[in-house]
Amino acid sequence: MAHIVVLGAGLGGSIMAYELRAQLRPEDTITVVTRDPVYHFVPSNPWIAVGWRRRDEISVDLAATMARKGIAFKPVAAERLLPQENRIRLVDGSDVTYDYLVIATGPELAFDEIPGFGPHGGFTQSVCHVDHAEQAQTAFETLLKNPGPVIVGAAQGASCFGPAYEFLFILETALRRARIRDKVPMTFVTSEPYIGHLGLDGVGDTKGLLESEMRGKHIKWMTSTRVKQVEAGKMTVEQINDDGSVKAETELPFAFSMMLPAFRGIKAVSGIEGLSNPRGFTIVDQHQQNPKYRNIFAVGVCVAIPPMAPTPVPCGVPKTGFMIESMVTATAQNIGNLLRGKAPDQVGSWNAVCLADFGDGGVAFVAQPQIPPRNVNWSSSGRWVHLAKVGFEKYFLRKVRKGTSEPFYEGLALKVLGIDKLKETRQG
Image (cartoon, rainbow, N blue to C red; front, side, top):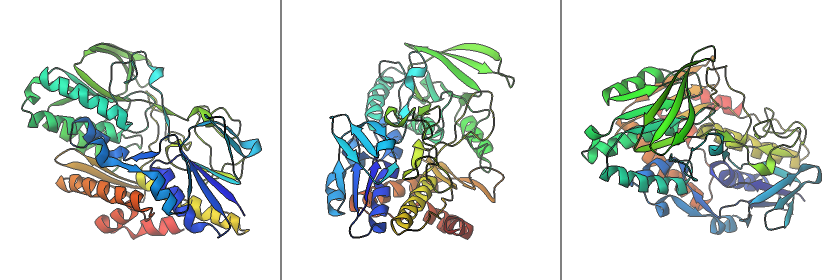
């Protein structure tokens, strides 16, 4: 008999629990430990921020679903992982022990690394959490009444650039619909070395597609840019040369700003030698297994992945939905192997498949593998991307409510692109 614990219940943790349930023997048990008993569909947060969705429309009460699947559910935040003891200390003073652990916590948001940054006492908004998105909506309503300059983008060390582009164009669409776009100058500020880099050195023609969209919508941009500090209505930024020197320092006025922060691992699993890297992300091998603590696996944004190449301003590597799904499936099957006395043998494909909605259009891309050189390097744009993103939202929320685990992104790639190699890579 074995007890498996999944730490976290976001996009990766929820489906991790469902896929593990199918891999367990009758005598095995599974427990999900999470600080939030309600799942929120993070990709819909940009819509929340402009009033196109409500919180209840993108939320799922996980306790009932987990109970139907025979999964124990403990909605208490972790205080500290003690891997030598196979134990997690929770903030309420209780402990959870495990035979196998899957870390799926997502990231901690590093707003504190920049003075005046972020929604917690700072002056910029965020769409990283539904609470932030609701706060951003309040600021958006103020912008509608008192139009002024807007800054959207991603700070140094950020690794999730897609939502920044999404929100930029969704906000632009919302301002046009409100008939005040002519009163709102917009600037995109990013740590990327060029528009459309995305932490992936571009995919297909993302550079050309996104630059064209910005030109067509009269949006200015600043690349290789570091945010120095933020004050009420003013952001101080530094543009960085290729050699790391400061090219120029600029003060940008704003009436509204949404900037994505850098990520780091949560405190409960950070600073553990052999488990986490200096940023607190969990170290795993090709089987999603930690090299030191062999009964610990990790999936999702909390996994340590080195940057592709040096950039003038640090850029992290994103973990897209398809990549996370492949991590989950490989991990579930590898734990299933271990329970039956076999060695882990499944490897996640780590391909990137992404839908970036722009409100009335969008950009989609597929990178196989995520790190170049690639076998598939494709991007496209059109209204179909917006419709596909809406369909994905409805599909995934239904999947979480019902407790199913069939992969979405792989099916999308196969149907839209006919890329059979994606399936072969995942299986191989």
